[in-house]
Length: 389
Image 1: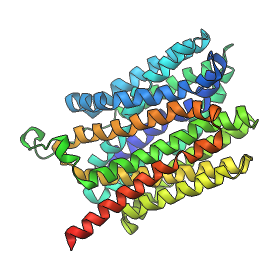
Image 2: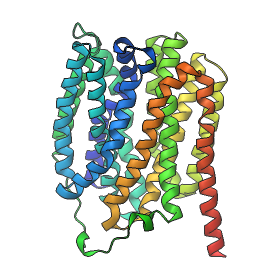
Image 3: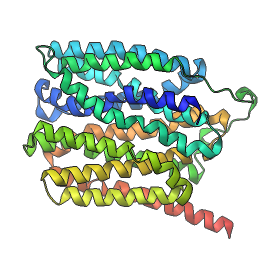
């Protein structure tokens, strides 16, 4: 495996701590600072909105100045915004803090490009493995983010101010790691290759199966995960320690399967793995619906992470079948925009829905979304069989 894959995996571990830290802490800081409890998850949702709005600009910047320079610039930017977030907590400014998490969406959008950078660094037969290996960095991030949050919680008078300052330290470490990354050199000049329009590219069934696989995976996962700390800690009275354990277990379940997901895709095929991921989501919802005890939350969130992995890695590995190297940036940008715009809606609505309609109704609302992906896969496979016949 190319050294870029391992460099990106380490950088992913350091920088993705942002997501696990913000999921764990964002709602708690929001509850303390927000003018209304229904706005408590806005800092968690803001980063998703920022990610959605940053996906296309990030890919365009990379196309212009290259992946390495973009990665380094975003690392420096992330350090500055983390310090500003700590300052917002000290000033007890809910809106400034939410704005900072929104700005960190640009960091998250950059992180999403790591898997594509890894895939471009290897041979075609290694693409699923490269995508999976980079996601392994999320295992370390699952523990690092919440632990940094707890470690920094009481460093200063303002609770959790130190958490975001320590997060800035992780971004500094990632900056040094990414200095060793090498841009991929393509044999053919991209400007010499013909490019189709997005309308032509999106007319392919494989494009929508890939995009919706990752989109459904992210939307359902975010919708449930964002509401979990609120439902567990604030509504059901589970301890902060138990809530942290459930979130950490969930994030580990998101990334640990990446050790063998690439092998499973090679053995069983991308589509079968995505279908299995959808069925795992159904088991997750059934488990979460059945009760409010710790084990209900823990098992359902672990299943949620596993289902996300199969859908997201599957969609990522399938997407290159829809574009040529010269088209990669605009297709990747469109893919990320659809994923994170949908995720933003899921994240923004999650807190309001769990407070207003309750945990069970929130779970039931994910079923139509899962059904959409089942139908999309079935239609594409039916069309392929018809063409083959």
